[in-house]
Length: 209
Ligand SMILES: C[S@@+](CC[C@H](N)C(=O)[O-])C[C@H]1O[C@@H](n2cnc3c(N)ncnc32)[C@H](O)[C@@H]1O
Image 1 (spheres, protein in one colour):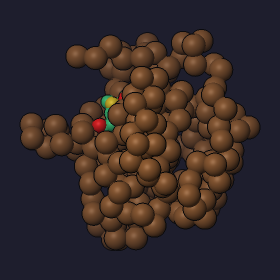
Image 2 (spheres, rainbow, N blue to C red; image 1 turned 120 degrees about the horizontal axis):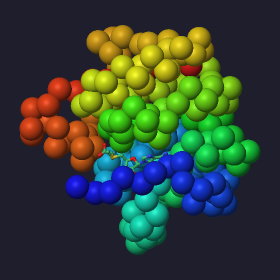
Image 3 (spheres, rainbow, N blue to C red; image 1 turned 180 degrees about the vertical axis):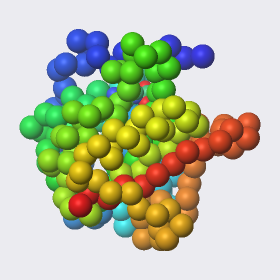
Image 4 (cartoon, helix red, strand yellow; image 1 turned 90 degrees about the vertical axis):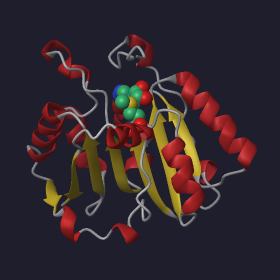
């Protein structure tokens, strides 16, 4: 079992310089998707290589994983994929993060750390303040995808997002994935593990209104 990183540690108060979208991507005009807590980024590599008409950005709090992912992007000369190291909550709250949020078409939170103990709930990545930051800076129509195998975490994330009146739930049955950031429905590493072990998956899509 890996040791979870405490996102509230003061180590993450300082954020790294965030380049402009033009510096990050070959074509900064493409639709932009952000995956929060992307770990080593395998899911984003799959997406970026398969779907070159989108730009993909990953934020991850474990520095080594981000360093390695960035090296892989350079080696493979991938122009539609970029990684940022740090606590997503601090990054998107920062003035530099606003250039990202206002350009996003969608965000995914795939299997975030559950932080089971009640006194640790404040370490969960989805927080009311964070959802307020997103509702203030995302364009109308931006989508948020959440997915987890922990029912309690799902309920917590769902009620936190819906307590903000600027987000509404989309009906997953009517959702056309072919036009989304993940047209071929690639799966994250955690999702593959969850499927093999036949755990339940709880997921929902929201739209900024
Ligand atoms: C359970 S893993 C899931 C990884 C991947 N999304 C998947 O589905 O396989 C959660 C990831 O989120 C990262 N993480 C946790 N809190 C974060 C935060 N506040 N900002 C950025 N990354 C965070 C963790 O380091 C970890 O890599």
